[in-house]
Length: 434
Image (tube, rainbow, N blue to C red):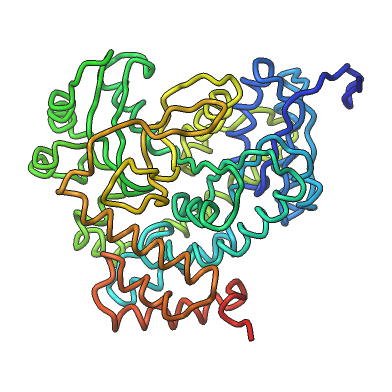
């Protein structure tokens, strides 16, 4: 039996480790830990970050939030990754290698070649993946030594691609998670004025390339009615009524880059700032707010940063795993024959049953032909990107860009790769090994 820093007796409970704990998203996660700490017996929350200044600011707010709730959870702040990982039950990764400045470059470089610049999609996501893969594999290698029974919940973007790299190259039990499916589910529940628990969405595809193929209310298929409501109330203004009716599916907003490429490219090239530049200012403002010693709750301005439902997504998943609940959840996990048109080991974003054994994809119909080719192309790009990210194979890197539907030609792919490699040299050691 042991006592926490307030002298209260502690019982054995869950130790949750967050790699990238200095993220401005972390107060969202802390809020979820507080709400679930009693039921899940969360004993320790470890926030680890390589940036001690950010960690102390975010950690200070996290401690005040825990104190204000009279939580029994012990907070640990550390820049030592091995200390953070040791004996963890759950490890949540939310890192950004290169920081927001690298994101801004990821968004700007493609625009020079008339290609969409976005942090998780296309050449921007490619650059981010190459920086991230070596670091994530290092984390997982340490995890295998220090917390081999832990589960890894990966929020690090591009989430599906990074989860694929982990599944391909390690034996760690990893699940990729994104807040977008939960966000769509809750939006539809609000549209219908029902509790989210009454709605089920048949999500299919890949991370940031997914569609709700079916909408079910109390088990009843209401897909067509919901599509018409979405159209009449203009809830997805980026997609035309003709497209939604032709697809008979609700696309993730990331599909805007594929279905409306010319418009999005024009908007990006004529915008005064990239999204990354907006985020840089938001993060500076948030960190200043977090420094306020009287602040002891998640500020409302965090909603402008994105990441809505992050806390609910992460803690609901942990709850389902811990309680062996068999709950339905949309996660990123291996295909295992769910879609015969994709490799068996391909990580997909799919409706799963979650229990103590992990995520099991629910039986569903094959990918519709209207989206099958796009999904296969992007999955091929992901496979080549992982090959390049792990081995430092420049040919694979160029072929990955060539395979991506948003890159128009091999010539453009070569030019993109040359610049991406040059500006990211400090984070791409796999391409400079002798």
